[in-house]
Image (cartoon, rainbow, N blue to C red; front, top):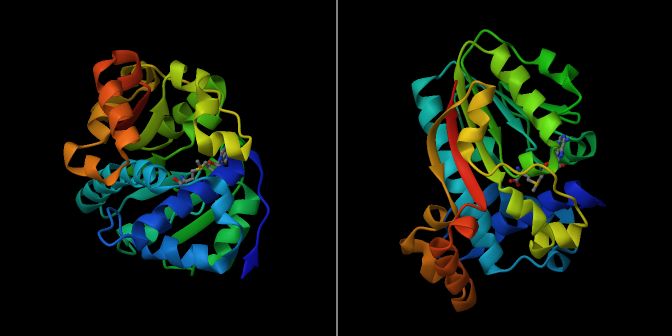
Length: 270
Ligand SMILES: C[S@@+](CC[C@H](N)C(=O)[O-])C[C@H]1O[C@@H](n2cnc3c(N)ncnc32)[C@H](O)[C@@H]1O
């Protein structure tokens, strides 16, 4: 067992990991992330104190699922791609997608997080981990620049400042010949209401960067390919998996544009 102590934004990745593990323990998992489940069993931490219930677990896996699907589609079409998975936390996406060794994959997060990943997850061919803040841009030089790139940031942008986040994407987009960005965004209202998010509140984390419309990032050289909002990210087919209270909240959010647009999951190309 690995004893861990994380605070603030680094602690939030334990909540999302636990969400994926809980989903895997349900009789009919959405994501089926066995590696997350195994990782939780190997980490000595009171996951119960994170306040992650079935509703939150669903929010986590319904965000991860379309991101996995878009990533898999890109990798099928670009088997020579470089993947830059930023703010990876303890996410086992590389094991879920299991790309061929022709794909070079970089998982990037703070050094303490990468240190834990190295203890918990096995190494694999063409797989690298970089322990750094993503906004200490020197790490970008470690990534080859001559191949199509898939840039993934799940649950990361909101922890960056607008200035830092925009500069990060500018640098990455300039580096590669072409590629896609798969990312989730909170609106400015989402940032204002951050303490209503139990994961953020319990971790004592602070969110900064709000993006109201996915097209706002097109100024960085990106083009929106697909965008899901709070309404479309929860398909009707999955609504019976959440509590009545959460179902009502989602139905209300679908009707009120500012709530509906409080979060987006976006696929861009460049
Ligand atoms: C909500 S967690 C999401 C983790 C993972 N993507 C997932 O979905 O499980 C946020 C992650 O972003 C990382 N993070 C936040 N700011 C960062 C920064 N400036 N540089 C690197 N990682 C950062 C945190 O350490 C944490 O692992």
